[in-house]
Image 1 (cartoon, rainbow, N blue to C red):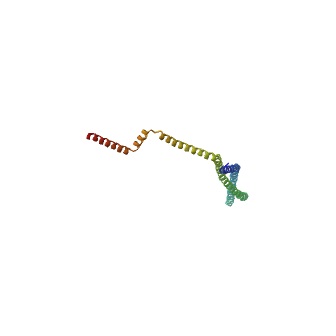
Image 2: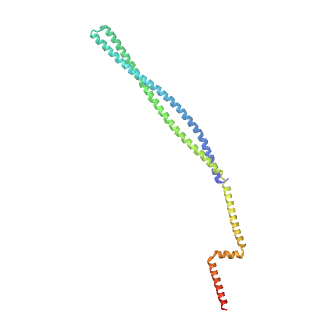
Image 3: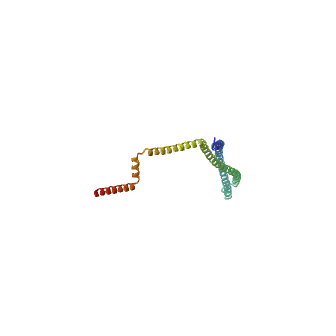
Length: 240
């Protein structure tokens, strides 16, 4: 095995280890997010219930204060009517005393409801902080999960690439290229040999024609010289 093949094998092994190590954190993170979301749902439900208690306590306090004011107004009215002789003074005093007693009772109820509302308000603030923390954790873990999944995809792609690269036979490829080069050289030499054989098989006439065809200017000059020679010969014959 070549050096590069060994390196690819090592890279492939490390990538597999990364993927194996990432699988559990991904599953754990997903489960953790599901658990946190359940806790968030429970916290939101508890927050809604506590807010309902707070609203009820505030309403009870307001109702109790209104009753206290009403009883005070009634006591004043009873005393006023007694002074005007509209009702018996003793009876007015008795009823006014009862009204003031009811007023005190209502004020005590209002105070108790107010204290209860204040305590509940503290619980609401604590629950709201818990909800905020849970939402922040869920957001953080969801982002972390995205990162882990992205890393897993990259690692899987690296495994695939390293596997493909590790399967490449560099020595076989070089051998194939050398054989192709040798074959091309053989074909080129064979073509040159056939050209030489073809030239050796040419007849004298073919060589003449080839020479004439390759130099038209020389052929024209030879033709002109031949014509001049023939003309001079004819003139010599006529002189005899």
